[in-house]
Structures are given as structure tokens and as C-alpha cells.
Image (cartoon, rainbow, N blue to C red; front, top):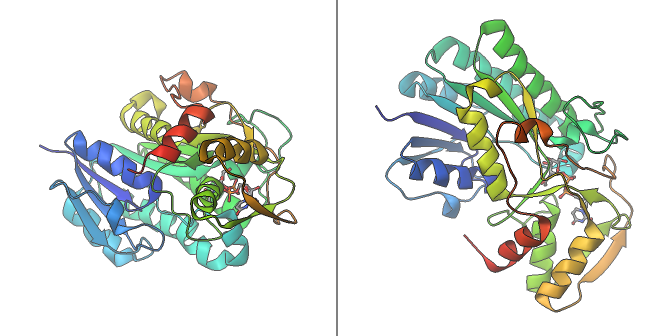
Length: 311
Ligand code: UD2
């Protein structure tokens, strides 16, 4: 029988790449997305991809889907992905990034007895300004924003559910993911999509801070590889894994590299650092690489593919 996968947020940036990969591999893939940041044009038209327009906060909808389909795998990737947005709208982002997750866990426990894996996307934001670099899964947790608090609480719920009810749980902490389909439309979008868009459209880019902040930018294709790994490897259950590259780059260096590719200068306005912003972020990826993950895109390869390619 064909295995069924639920991917919440499946019309989104990272999620839609995962949908494509798993659909190509022959699974039946169900998407629940409210299109708040995802886009219909990201959704595969393959016959084994099923789109359900809906919100993960809608418990009745999620319950009926789970009872009807009895998923083999569930990826909860839907989220309000912006740290800054969580600071502006903490209650609304909490409902998506935490409350909906707790409801979903309860529904799966009660109604989805054949579940083979639940995969939750947490975030490197949980490390905050922890001075230890690179950041290990065992490093200090310093929660600087509602976003970080919600991601950490949800991740811990997921792992506790695994222990308490013997459910097949795993979580990943994404570092700064970038690549085709990342939506640059809002001030809350991932910085690389905004910078690229400003180069393409000759728009003014606002740098918050002095541009020396560093991030471990990880290309979306590497992230998909990591997600497939945690989905399939039994021995990876009941743990949380960093997903990054093990290298970091400053915002200034990104702008310089893109300036070369686009052969032009970026118009930059400088503003004060954002509240809750992290200075440096770098992943220790030894835990996930010990299970076979290997990033294939360093920042140069990733940027040059990102600049050229629109998938
Ligand atoms: C990103 C993810 C978040 C989480 C985290 C993990 C996004 C939108 N956010 O948060 O979900 O997983 O990584 O560490 O993908 N900046 C500017 N100008 C702009 C936009 C951003 O200077 O127009 C700066 C921003 O202040 C920050 C850096 O660029 O210092 C990165 O910002 P971001 O919003 O892309 O990502 P981050 O690290 O806050």
C-alpha cells in the first residue's frame, strides 16, 4: 500500500521542496496550508499530491483529516517563521507555533495509531546569544523572542510525547534556510530572499545593525536531505538535530558576494539592530552527520544556484 504523508505548510518555501521530493518517490502527499505565506504556484500538480486549503489551528479540520487518512508520516512544518513578527504579534504567532502543535500531538496520539514518524521543525533561534560557537544540541538555551520560546516549548512537547506515550518523534533545529521559492514579500521574510529581491528590482535594502551579524546559511536542498533522513532512520528518533552547514557568513559578506554576481552595488539604508536579534549563529552538525547527513552546498555554491535558478 502507498504510504501517506501529511506536510503542514506544504505550499511554503521549504515544505514545497519536500513535497516534490517525497511525491517523486511515490508517497501520497497531503498538504494543509492556509496560504498565509505559502503560494499555490509552489504546489506540485502531480496526481499523488493533495492540497487542502486550511489552517493548522482548525482542530476539527485536523482531526477529520487524521481520522480519514491515518498518516504514516507527519511533518509539522507550518509556522510563522519570523522572529521579528513574533515580537510584533506574540499571541497570534503563539497560536500557530505552539498551541496548534499541542493540539496536533493530542490528535495523533488519539486517532493515528499507525504513525511511523512525527517530524517537528524547531529553530536555531532557541540558542539565542549563547556565547558557545558552534552551537551544539546540548548548548545553553537562551530564549530571546516569543518565536524562540514557542519553538523550544513545542520541540520539548514533541520529545516528551515520544517518551510518555511511546510515539515516534524527532525534531530538527533549522539554521538560516535559503533558496528558490523563499518569499521576499514581507519585511519579515528571510534576509537572503530580501537581499536578492533588492538586487533584482533595484530596491533599497535596510540593514539592521552593522551587517557584521553572522548566520549559518543552509541551502534548502540540504535541508530536504536532512528531513528525509530523520523521517526514515529509526535510530534518530527521540532526539533533536541541528540542520546547518557548520560554516557561518556575515550579512556584509553575503551582500559583497551577491554584488559580484549581479555586477552592481546594493542601495543600503542602515537602521538599529532589531530587538531580540541574534549576533552570531553557527551550527555544530556533528550529531546529524554521524547519521549520514552531509551538506552539499557551501555558501558560494548555494548562492550561485539561488541567483540563477528559479524552481
Ligand atoms: C531565521 C529564521 C527563523 C529561525 C532563525 C534560526 C526567517 C525569516 N527566519 O531568523 O525562522 O529559524 O533563523 O536562527 O527565515 N536583516 C536585515 N535586513 C532585512 C532582514 C533581516 O538586516 O531586511 C537582518 C536581521 O536583523 C538579522 C539577519 O538579517 O540580523 C537575519 O534575519 P532573518 O530574519 O533572515 O533571520 P533570523 O536569523 O532572525
